[in-house]
Amino acid sequence: MNATQFVKSLYANVDSKNLNGLAGMLDEEVRFKFANHDAVNGMEDTLQANEGFFSSINSMRHSLNGIWQQGDTIICNGQVHYVRLNGSECSAEFATILTIRNEKITNYLIYADVSEL
Image (tube, rainbow, N blue to C red; front, side, top):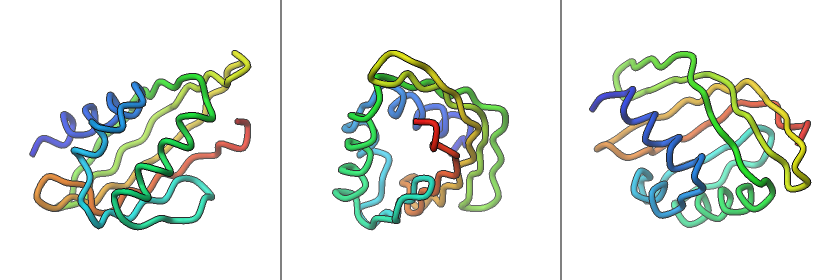
């Protein structure tokens, strides 16, 4: 698996709010934690958490600064640019840690300060 292609595909799905595309990248028993929100377990709860977040913003765009892979772990960082529902904008730095098994995400941790949203 190519870590760069995997991460770019993940963020293409996220930035386009493509829940079906995201689902195809997740393990059935994925653990998902976004910023300071409680972690959720399982694909259904992960998709619901993402859908809830997607509906709270107009759009987002990730730009990647780095992608690193060590064994079954991929780490990436960069900036995410948000457009709020009212049309105003803000950006935040992020770091994501992914654990991959059989080319599916089993652990999906996103660290970002989204308090400006």
